[in-house]
Image 1 (cartoon, helix red, strand yellow):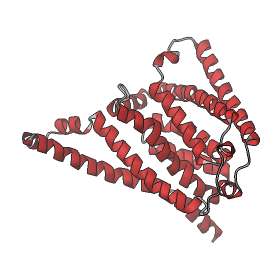
Image 2 (cartoon, rainbow, N blue to C red):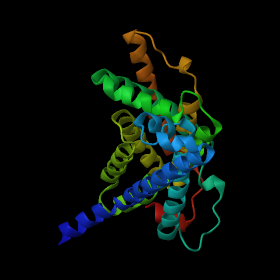
Image 3 (cartoon, one colour):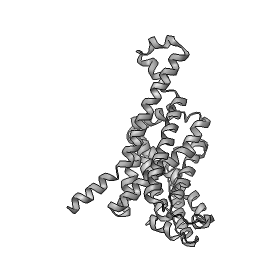
Image 4 (spheres, rainbow, N blue to C red):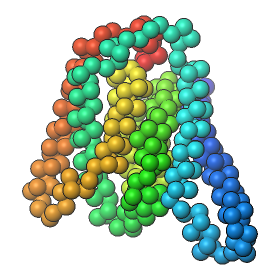
Length: 295
């Protein structure tokens, strides 16, 4: 009976992700119909071309359309999962929480160091997987181009650095991780939510580095006792990935330089974790109600 109960708890942890996928599917289907309807309204002659797969592909793979669909989905998912998180995990009588009980300069510096380390570590994860199977990288590259990351628009930037981090943190480090911690130890629960986070991205390259980043987002959220900290870390990570020029990444063939960069990234991440733990110890105690929901 205990095994069945535990299995049920684990399966229940899948519900937030399934809800997000359902929202994504409904928004995508609705978006396609709206897009085609607007195409027909603007030019009735396009109705005859609807049976042409090439035409349909060009219409539906428009980068602005894809970015808009992603943004609408993420907003709805954030509202739905935010409501779930608020109803289930936020204390009904919320005491005032000082900013100093959430973050301090040491924590902020730690998150920056951790973000920098993880950026370069994830770059080498991508490079390794691309070497193992170039088709994986080709699929990932085409996806990024179709969304518009070759030429970042204001809508895509808004989605990448604000909407997506809030939505994804509520899904995975918010509701999913909270329930997973009730079914298994934190170590296993963190791996579980990070695996779902990686799988949610739908391709090997993104899935692999999302899994690694998801592990650290889970750690930041759990150790810091607040989803706000993992949202901040996620935002910093996406800001760097969206706007940082490629010139900051070494593209030469020197193995020594690559090893030095990777070692430096690991050291930066390790130092970030060390400073983060120290910053947590030094910040003002959070109200008891918030300590309870972070356990």
